[in-house]
Length: 155
Image (cartoon, rainbow, N blue to C red; front, side, top):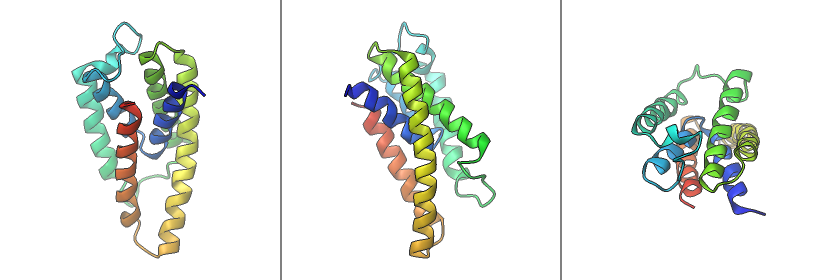
């Protein structure tokens, strides 16, 4: 299997966990030259403004995820946002390696779909099984999403 396609799927998986962590990592990786998006339709992701914007949005998302009124990630709106985010990030990974943006977007979107449902179910089961407050699972999930995002964009 082509490892670039696996990375596109993986960064999509991260978007399923945290919709804005993945694009923040992609934008910073492009800003720092780890992903080469210059000359592609996605070159805007390498701009300083995109990197700062996605970072700020990711921080707000991490805070918002801890609030009790936050909708489920598997609800139609949040799920669509995660799939779009995963598609964008997957396309960026493939664009950086001169591969098909369409395939990268499809794999990123599928990864986000899987990440959203698997992440939700795992978090729900851990909270119930360990009989702990949601925050004690949410924060490690945040750290895992951040770590995975950096792993996928630095390969």
